[in-house]
Image (cartoon, rainbow, N blue to C red; front, side, top):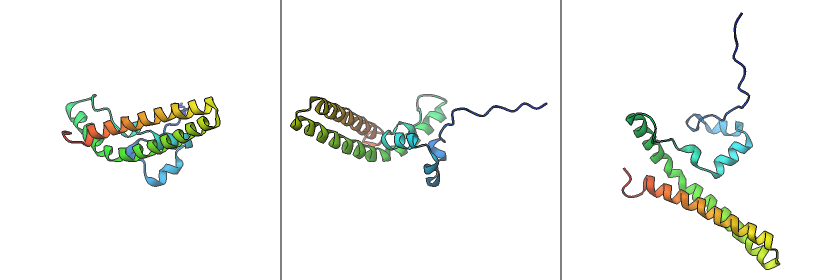
Length: 128
C-alpha cells in the first residue's frame, strides 16, 4: 500500500525569481493586483541566515530596488486620483466622499514615501 500526499488546498503563487512573462497571466487576479501595487514581494529578508545568505539577499534587494520608482509613480497616480475624488466631494458638499478621497490620498502618499525611502536606502549614495 503506497501513501500519497494530499494536494495542497491553498495554491501558492510561484516565487518571484521563477516567474516568466508568460506565467504572469496564469497568476490569480488578486495576486496580479497585489504585485502591481505593492513591492514587498520582490525583496528577500537580509537579516536571516548565514553571512553568505545575507549578502546574497542584500545584493538581490539592491538589484530589485531599480523597480521602486515604477511603484512610486503608480502610487502618486493613485494619490492624484484620490485627491481629485476628495476635491470633487468637497465641492459637491459630500463630506463622506471628501473624507474618503483625502484619507486615501494621505495613505497613497505615505506608501510612495516608503518606496522612496527604500529606494534611497538601497540605491542611494552610501549604499554598499
